[in-house]
Amino acid sequence: MNEKNHDMTSTITVTVNGTEYTRTTEDRTLLVHFLREELGLTGTHQGCVVGKCGACTVLHEGVPKKSCMLYAAQVDGDDLTTVEGLADIAESEGVDLETREGATLHPLQMGFKEKHGLQCGFCTPGFLMTSYALLEENPDPSEEEIKSAISGNICRCTGYNSIVQSIQWAADELEGGSQETEATTDGGVPTGGCGADCCCQAGGDFDE
Ligand code: FES
Ligand code: FES
Image (tube, rainbow, N blue to C red):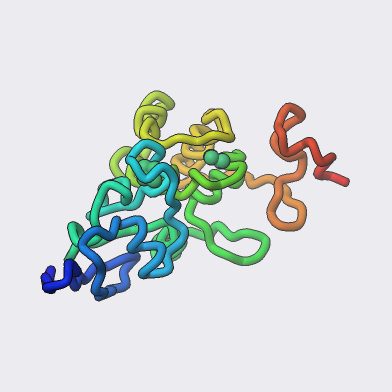
C-alpha cells in the first residue's frame, strides 16, 4: 500500500490492464501523467486537464473516471483499465474481429472503425472507455442512453452521430451478431469514406 516518503513522493502499486506496476511518484502527479509518462501508456490522452473533455477517461475499478481528476497516489492498490487493454479483453472473450493487418480489435474499436466514429482520434480513447463501461452495465442501450453516457466526452470532429452509431454497432456485435464489415482499401480505410459532405473527402475519391 501507499508508502509515504519524506520528499513529497509516494511509492504506489497499481494494476493496469492486468499488469502490476510499482513506482515512486510525486504526490502531485496526476493519474493521466502517471499513465502516460511513468508507465508509457500513451493511449490515454491528455486534453483539457480540468475534467471537461473526457479524453483522459480510464476505468478505475471498472468505473469510468477522468484520470486528470485523480492523483496517482489516490489509486494505490487499485485496478485500472486503459484503452490499451481493450484488445486483450476482446481476445480473452474470444472475440474474432481482425483488421487487415491482423490486429485484434474490441468490438467497440471495430465499431468506431466501421461507422466512422473518429476523425482525428484525439477523443477516441475516452469515448471507448466510457462506452465500454456503458455496455458492461447495459448491453442494449437506447440511443438516448448512449447519448447520456457519453455526455461527459467532447469531440470536436465528428458531430457525435457517428459515435452513437459506432457504439450501437458494438452493442449489436456483442449481442451475438456477426455484422458485415465494409470492404477496405489499404490501411483499413473504408471504401467510399464518410460521405460526400465529410472533410475527409477533400483529398479525393477513396476508390481511386
Ligand atoms: S484531460 Fe481530463 S477531462 Fe480533459
Ligand atoms: S475525432 Fe477528433 S476530437 Fe473526436
